[in-house]
Amino acid sequence: MAGYQTFRQVAYAGSFEGSTSIGLGVRARLPFRVFILDGAGSGSRLIVDVAHYW
Image (cartoon, rainbow, N blue to C red; front, side, top):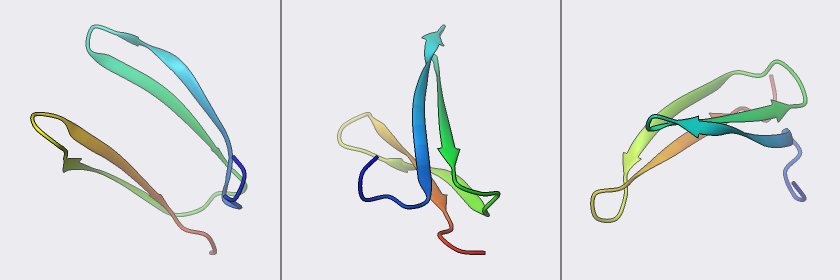
């Protein structure tokens, strides 16, 4: 993940019955928040906002 100091790794864990699991590795125990925004058409976007510093 070139250019991102906070994130270390992203791993796709799979999908089953309409749920998808993704793992995010970060450099430390940092505060974060997760929310969903409306996307184009009937889609949506998952936002993971992780602090850079604590």
